[in-house]
Amino acid sequence: MKNSKACNAIKTTFILPTKTVCERNCENSPLILNEMPRQTLLFCDRPYLTVKKGGYIVLDFGRELQGGVTVTLPAVSANSHLRIVFGESVSEAMSSIGYKNATNDHSIRDIVLPVTSWQNFRYGNTGFRFVKLEAVDNDISISCVQAVSECRDLEYKGEFLCNDPLLNKIWQVGAYTVQLNMQEYLWDGIKRDRLVWVGDMHPEISTILSVFGDNEVIKNSLDFISRYTPAEQWMDNIPSYNMWWLKIQYDYYMWSGDADYLISQKKYICDMVRHILSTVNPDGTHIVDYTFTEWSSYETEFEKTGFQAMLAIGIDSAKKLSAILDEKELATECEKALCAVKRHVYPYTGNKQVAAMLSFAGMVDAKEISENIIKPGKEKGFSSFWGYYALKVLAQSGNTKDALQIIRNYWGKMLELGATTFWEDFDVTWAENAGRIDEPVPDGKRDIHGDFGRHCYKGLRHSLCHGWASGPTAFLSNHVLGINVTEAGCKKIKIKPDLGNLTWAKGKYPTPYGEITVEHQVKDGQIKTFCSAPPEIEVSVENQT
Image (cartoon, rainbow, N blue to C red; front, side):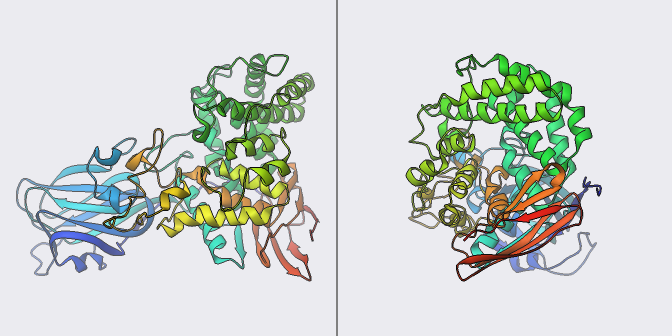
């Protein structure tokens, strides 16, 4: 086996603004778009961008970035101050702290800095696309402004292309969303929620394995959480997160085949599993008080339903891991508990995500869910996180055509509103009469960033780059290209494509031995598949009509 672990340093890239969005009391603003050295020049007789006292300029760097800015100044008056405001939208860049819930939470994005003559300084570590520069108390001339992008330098080993350009773009945007969040650890978001929320990582890791292959950020993050959480406690104080940790451990082992790593986790896994089983009653109910799983069901009648599904997913993963680790008695205990848990199906018909998760857990028939609850054109109430599992359930029930249309209608709508990364949450009803994120909100339009959001992410606190929203990327690779890992380490791969209403699709999928290349074409109502794979991998193809 090739060494599949990828150690990619964070790469620093300097990026020019692509345009000025708006300005007030500025001179020579087009000059700031030109390539200029990040170096001050003494007594240089040339014009500069000048922001007059009380004036400002808002710059667009073309796409969401993680990092900050570098600013180069010629001579300035004594006791001058420059205000820098980062924004994931123009609305956020134009905001002040407190306006529409704008904050400096988790990363400072609005600050006033003292500046001096012949200075080059670098400031910021946040998620942004837009930057507002404001002269607070004196005129300030600026010779150069560039974004400082800090991102892992990763090769896109995976690939997805089809006859629908929108789906191709969505695949790329999902991959880029996760790439930005692959810092030292795997974060939820690069502006807010710069945290290792292990319960949110499953779609991200599914995307990483589909696009980049193995990466140190996966183990770094799994180990970070387990290192600081005793096995008899709940990760991040949320019981469902332990279930996700076990699910991720199993999925990662199936992809990587890294037995040494899994064995190194054996005691912790076994102790955690015994703790989880101690909370399950013989009849399949549980004694867990906090049943949070996902925001769409938070504090509703569906919350306990979602947790019951997560309990089944966690125990099922625990059973499989116990068997792999030769803990036969523990695997038997898991099987007994799993059967009991699956007998309890609570209400689900009013929540698309919870219904899908029940099916994903094997507790409700996928066809029933896909035909009665999840339908294209009815994306209201859809979730950018657990919506991924709704797509998987649609595909499982033979409704990939519907899944693709939901991807277009839901994730595609974010792109239509100017997104270059996918958002923490989104509801299609928010888009009605809403302005784009890459322009000032027009009169009579709603602010898609500042006027919406829920729970802890209301208004401008809402993250517009959240890795959990990348599900369509993994879905298109795994379900449309049809790549299914059936033996640990990708030693056996079943290719079972489902093109929905596409006429062709092709791409690559990374494995520990190299990339699998596939191409599917619909001819005479049937899918014709061409594939190549490293010699270490046994590939079987199951084409569908």
